[in-house]
Length: 636
Image 1 (cartoon, rainbow, N blue to C red):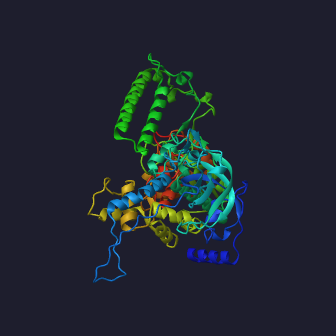
Image 2: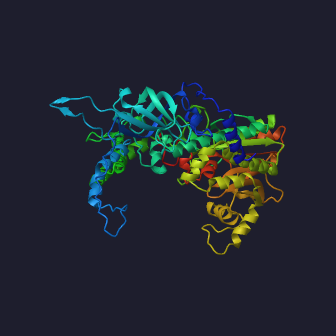
Image 3: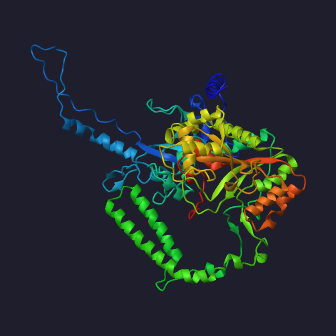
């Protein structure tokens, strides 16, 4: 049954027997998705008592018992001419009179719409009788809240009299509200919502400081939200991406468990690795490095850096609050002066700091925490091989670290990979696994994250649903590296930055041309030159290529890598020598697997953040991970 058919069946089931309201497990509340993602949008739940919790996305206030808008001024009727129709009249009212008559309405409307974020509704001051203040007027407050379980928000109606918190604080963007009340259909027929909550009790109010809270009613660009990674999941877009990310994780476990793989945890810290790696050591923890060098003026570098951070926040606040240009210019000038001071302090500290640093080659590794060289794991497949050679098919999911000094839209220093290893398996088997796994993830999102995919299609990339559906229902084209080079060389209408010649690594530009322009979809490229892939990949019979492949998708690049790894001891030993690896002892255990009970084996590695880019259309990988770490950047 396709997605449309499942949706139709769900609607029929709800008509026959509406689902009861279920509480969120481990919490005495109802999640919004339980109400709002029903086929009727929750309309049949009117009259049910529930407890709802969430964060304010927007708010407005209407004064209780406010008088209706003033009637329009009397219309002057021109007497009919003697030859005209008695029933026809002509309105004779000037534009000035119309504008004046509507000004009060416009003011009230502005007051209502100005709530939330850095501005609030203008609540009337108590009228004065003599010099004695009367009771303040009461308002009906309308909140749109989100609890992160759904794209949709729920409107809560609150009488300001029931809250001990001032209405302006209650209505601020980001306020957390837990309310108990009765679900009802909105009184206003024009609203797009089919259900709302009439609150009878406020069980909790978590206020915010609107001057310091970084989010606003304006939709901030994703790159600005990265400076506030601890708050950005409260935005609808990041919340939706988070749920898609979670679905991809569950789908990965589901696929491999269903296909007979065993889950294995591999180490994050390892003594074996290849490529640019992060060293793990405690030997550089010199006391001198912890001292703050103070200048004679009394400033420390940490104090100045804290001031820079605070002044940067001030500039962001001024820009969001539409402050005048002069204030922004002055703040930027002040920030520049502080940044210059920080640079001067850092330059003066450099000689002293460098004198206390210990050069890596002079480290006494025997005194280190582990007593040997250790690094953060680049790939878990090394360790998975040992378990594949015992239990057959295994997989893992965890963080992987690459110390390349690269900062672009497709690279992170810390990424999460789903990795597998399969005994008694060759290159074609690994490509089959990658093909089926990739298409399973696409189909899973379409069937299980329908609301989020609709929202992302609307907000980020309108072609997402079409692309996922096409991928899930078609076979991926496979061709060799040699064929790829031939295709690139035939292209005469454009010049590539790196000339496509046999033996060079395919660049992002080459891959983009193949997937975006020639095939317009995902492809699998296999059998790469031995020089461009790691030493442990199996050497093909032609002695020129190795049994490796990449699954490449449009706009993103490589999402899955895979290979059949070398099982022959003598060949692997020769490849280690060929790559000039001097620390052979680190691979003794790896060679042991070839000495004792060797077997052909292959595996794949899916880059989860790259898969998320393909699934959502996000332009930058830093928005595909909760707390991005890249060269020179680790904010939280």
